[in-house]
Image (cartoon, rainbow, N blue to C red):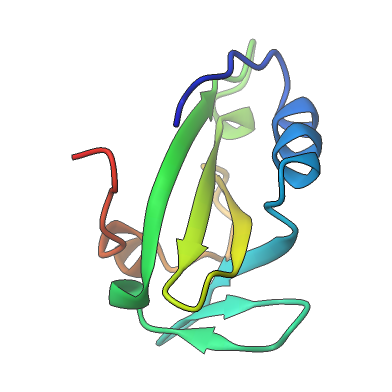
Length: 102
């Protein structure tokens, strides 16, 4: 799905939202949480449709990745993972989400 070339994180999220990726996901302690619907998903219930990386120009903590996700129930959304020390995402849980492109 990586059919886009985005310049900024906000451009990526806005474009993906306009394409139907309306939910915001967050990797919690034991599950991936859909912030609007409050549904919780096991990583196996999701798949990564696209991955978009953004490099910080001067500060490595500005680096981030946007994942375009689809749940087994058809819910589509994005998960933004920052590489700063205070990102708060469960990275190990995110790594368990299967990539549909592989």
